[in-house]
Length: 114
Length: 114
Image (cartoon, each protein chain N blue to C red):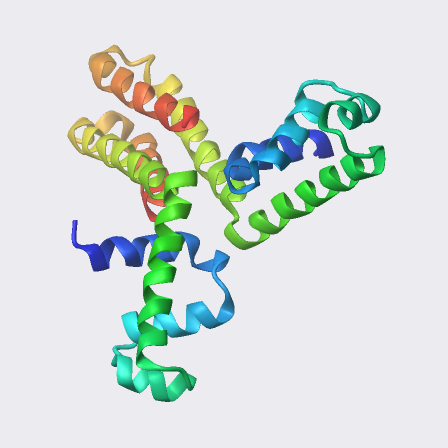
């Protein structure tokens, strides 16, 4: 998987565990498209300092995933919810239980969107 | 909810983020039924030190939940999975789709057991 996408996903799960400053720098550069030089000016630290912060943040995010495995676990849940949704799609051709199936589908979507 | 049960649940989710020593003390006293005095002897720190460690661990677990909300989120998922399971139980009286429903039930149980 693309490293940037992977880190964005990890950030989504574990960002709250970083310091406020780490979050601001990481967000501005990674999601706000600030260059290292611009971030250096904005935060009043060297380009190298910005670079080091990004690496430290990514190492921290990876360490949290290694310990908690939330991204892996949520992927498993979403995968199973998707399988339920696909089975419901097949069952829906039978009209007798349309309402019950609609309810299962709704719950499944809610799981997938968590 | 019972505070001990709540903390056991939080420990299950966030224990990996504690230090090795915090984990050992917390497990021995809370799950291994060691008294504060016995833990004090075992770990070579004062009874008060054991007591403080337990309080610090519980504060840390609560702080992780406040930041990440995993227990809350997993409860939501399990609640939805349980609802799917109950609907399937009703649908199962219809024998035409027994295999599909059995598969949905299996996936739902897997979600609930994660």
